[in-house]
Amino acid sequence: MVEGKKILVVGLANKYSIAAAIAETLHKNGATLGFSYQNERFEKFINEFASQNGNGFTKICDLSNDSDIKELITSTVKEWGEIDGIVHSVGFAPAEQISGNIEDCITREGFQITHDISSYSFSGLLKEAHPYMTENSSAITLTYIGSQEATPNYNVMGMAKASLEASVRYFASTLGAKGIRVNSISAGPIKTLAASGIKGFKTMLSKHGENTPIARNITATEVGNAAAFLLSDLSSGITGQTIYVDGGYNIQATSFD
Ligand code: NAD
Ligand code: 0WE
Image (cartoon, rainbow, N blue to C red; front, side):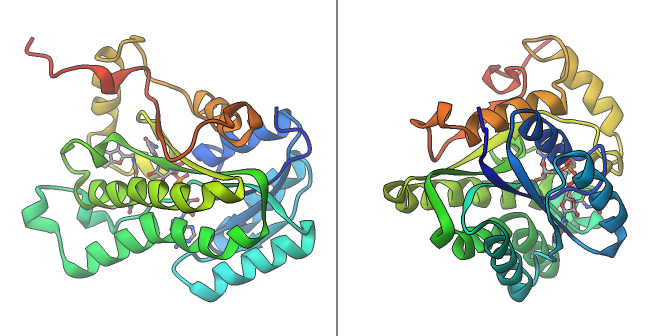
């Protein structure tokens, strides 16, 4: 479904990353992949992962830095000439921002960092990449239902995800005529490294599984499969959307049991 498509994957940290599952599905389905990573700490893993998934290029890119974003796109275009797809699987809030009641922990600096990395970075990537994106190309990002519903502890991350989802609609609206589609996947909770650092995550995960229509939690592979669909021409009529890959969790009303 994505044979021959040249897709840049941003947000791979380790084997538990949602970006890893997405990359594996894309590779299995014939895509050519390139990877960017946040800093030297991830270099060894990324290079190993890249060599096992098609031997694509790897490039360091701190998304808080405009010149890093520019260099990432420049080197991607040098490598490929054009870009058929972008996967943005990135989110960050300083730990103290996502623990406790929002009124006790939100700060101007925490707000700025969270919105910069978790929302602006997607805009920044598209701003640089769109001139090189092909007719029938597609960009996706990862979001969470905490953008729509006040979720305990998610706090300013939920505000940044709301901004990210709005950015998907704005970019979809203006890039559509160039044949570029932009969507997000709203994933149910998955035990990644980012998630395992969150207190009470395990309890949340098991309650979430019980209270979901499919009666279990979703897997990163299921997100990878939806991502491959959104990056492929099979989804050519879909843009500006938030697609829920959450086992149907979002369609339920509050339970009063
Ligand atoms: P992860 O920690 O594996 O991925 C987060 C990535 O963000 C890492 O690769 C990290 O290096 C990168 N990153 C952070 N700051 C950066 C910076 N300044 N520059 C470049 N990269 C930076 O965790 P994950 O759970 O795979 O998260 C991926 C995406 O999925 C995030 O947007 C997250 O909000 C979203 N998401 C996660 C879940 C979940 O339960 N795990 C659910 C829904 C959505
Ligand atoms: O988007 C996320 C996690 C994002 C995240 C995680 C961390 C942990 C380590 C962002 N920043 C940081 N900063 C750190 O220092 N998810 C959707 C997973 C998640 O995070 C939560 C959740 C869920 C679900 C936080 C509180 C409540 C629920």
